[in-house]
Length: 320
Image (cartoon, rainbow, N blue to C red; front, side, top):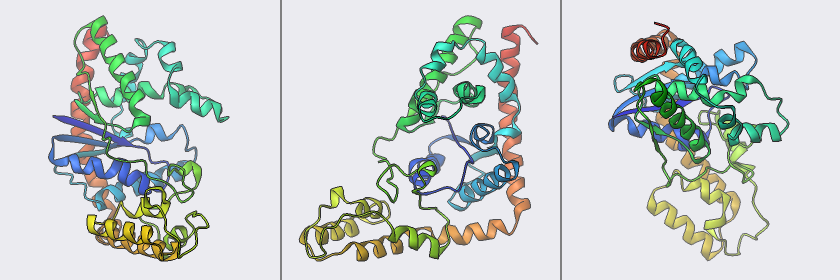
């Protein structure tokens, strides 16, 4: 089974990215043939500084490789190294209705927030469809907030196949319902746009300060606390074992555990979890040529698949 995932290089990756997308994608490496790309074309809808985009792209590559991506198991590449997706986007655009794109929640939400809409932002789901369909992807892990974009990709694939003939596998979504939304330090969903993130590879002093600044209520130290509604516990449970979670939950319910102590335990659990990844990342950062080699080899494998798809599409639409 061919599995495809992608992530935008729009900033430093954080715990929401790790638990929401990265770890599930890495866990799938043993489940099928995985394609994972750094979506730097998509990032152009929000990142308009070229040096910043290059830096973020390098950071994402380092982060994934450090966290366990195996380039022997996963085809890992930059989106821009497969230009065929841009040509495919045009063919798909010609069977995509305006109404379909106008109904996309992501576009409407950004416009409602005052973002000036560009054609790139509006047509984002078509490029996403090209990313998926170019490699004949069968399974696409998506969060609930991205599910509609996959539905759009399915709709576009079906329309094209019906109009021109069979060209694409119609992909299926893989939604991990058990993966909860990771809260930020203010209680909202962790997001760079909210400024409430905890970076995966932040420096020790900065991350400790961020964790100690997690918003809590004024419940006294000695009073019982409900772990199920507690922000510190919600983050701690992501790193803790079952026994550790049960122990902290019991202490919260019994009273006598303050938020300061809980935050310190959260930091220790976070720091220990990413310790081996930090060492691996430092090794990779010292050899940028090796990282580029991995991405180049991945792009060659991805392009070969995309070219086969595009050859078929060109023939079907009559531009071969």
